[in-house]
Image (cartoon, rainbow over all chains, first blue to last red; front, side):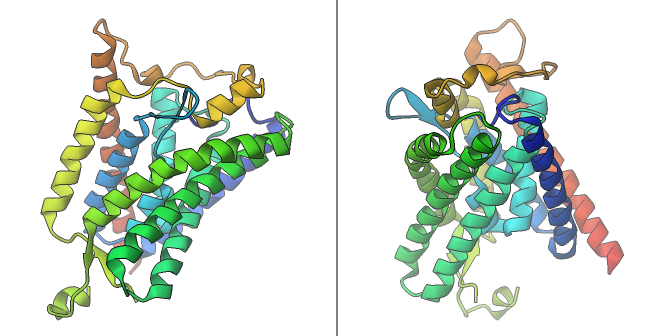
Length: 215
Length: 105
């Protein structure tokens, strides 16, 4: 479930709708300069995968469930701008076609799971890879991916808490404790799924074929 | 310096496509129906009633296609429809962005 209509008050959903639309416009503008033709079918496939995986609620402690979000996966594979566009598309389809997540809060959901999820995941993954410069990549890649995905979920849930508290729906302390608490468990699932897919798709660049390297 | 690249061979992407189809159609009907993280917090802190879906004209509400079939079938069908919509939507957006890039060069 994403934030439904009614959880955020008018000032918050208006602000987040404007911010979300602005962020999407910016991401589209950036992407139209960098997108490569070969990426397009892969983007569609991973977008469909994220949609499918979000349908699968897995049980966690205390009769609660969680599901995959995918911001880290999308942004590691295609960068944060395309990742944000993909997450926005998933949320828009879910809200309008499947009544999952509200309409007035679409911008809020895009900011929390899309913008925050993609950015945190992307920045942490890239910092980890840059720091290690490809050393011990068999160990570093999965660990970095897991940590990036886990942090992206926990940060996204903290942002939802901030919006709930700003709306006066629930006090900030209570919201943060509960949301971050549950999502630190859900984040383990996010980390495992993201790591599995990234490990499966990742290939070490070799210098044997200079044509491929220069790509 | 990027030392890791992502599968250039088609095979892995095709496998992932099949995995996606299996998840959406075969696994989705058996997903947990427990409240998820945010829903649970809303129930525990007493603001779940504030959820108000003024928007009720979704064609496939709650991931169940509205046809007289067992629930599992309705969820599986909605998963397949969702995949199709997502795939087509992202292909169109991707193609448009590539076209814009080409025309701006």
